Image 1 (cartoon, rainbow, N blue to C red):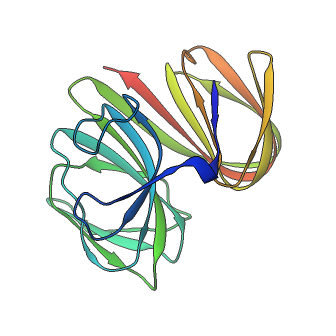
Image 2: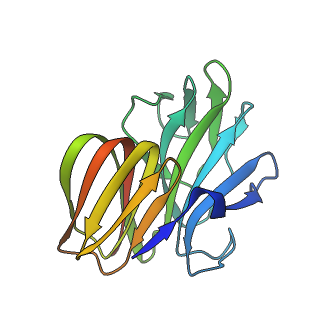
Length: 191
């Protein structure tokens, strides 16, 4: 288990050079945007335009802040994503164009190489205590807004806005959380 503080997240340019990504976690550690097995990051989108293409990668996107974004994913009807929408999963190696609804947004991206990994992303709105079952080996729990305390395998700690908790060997365990927060749980599994 490792706490990843918001101030320590790595900032880097987008693959297409048109924005900035805040990398929360990547595997293998220090992998680039071209050779990661899995990657979890946030980005601010301030202008309409195409998404970067990632060959052989599946992606899930959630809107953290802002008025929303319409995604035109090749082969599908356009989809409006807002902070109230469920996270949207799609292939990262097909053309996707984004159009902002009314101003910049911040999104959360989870990406995995489909030849060996899969992932899920869920939003958890917390108001009090809750136990969250962890079904996969690798889990990342992000506190987006608010603050919370946690307990896992007898260890305790606290997360503020922007902090994350990376748990390895998590399958079959549970994370106990308490507080007032909007949070997200990303789970990575081996296919």
